[in-house]
Length: 205
Image 1 (cartoon, one colour):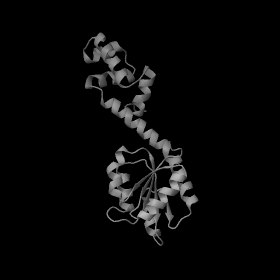
Image 2 (cartoon, rainbow, N blue to C red):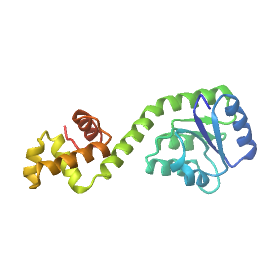
Image 3 (tube, helix red, strand yellow):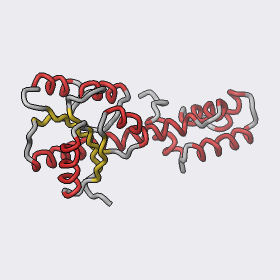
Image 4 (spheres, rainbow, N blue to C red):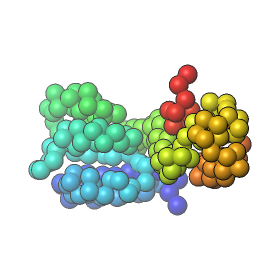
């Protein structure tokens, strides 16, 4: 089990990939190597959260294009860009597109590992938050239209009787729907249901 987190290295230079793999692996990171950005983007949806370390100049999708695509997907992964000598304008553009930082080759090993640790530490809470929000949204999406109406009634503070009257169905039926809502939303109490509804953006402040 890796203690420090996952790192995804994208570089078309095999020697660079090998040396980064050795460095990061021996520093306690879980490392996955990619020789081009497309290969990484293809598997991105299924990857565990981690830090991306990408070269800026690559055939096909370069580091800048990679940043644009990850930004479009709202990926929470922090990205460090490696640049060759004199690529500062590119590095600045990368920062504007959301790169956490950039490193000029050749760089000191310690500097890279420290940057990766910092990037993961800072981005992790947001990534976890995002995963929770997506999970709650999926729960809401699993409700039938009627269950969703009942949930909206519950979080609006209406009693079973009032919800029943509003939709012209029996209070007993509302109880069944209410039980379904609690099960599907994985809520143990009404207050928990309200909290989940707030996270899902169903409640306006």
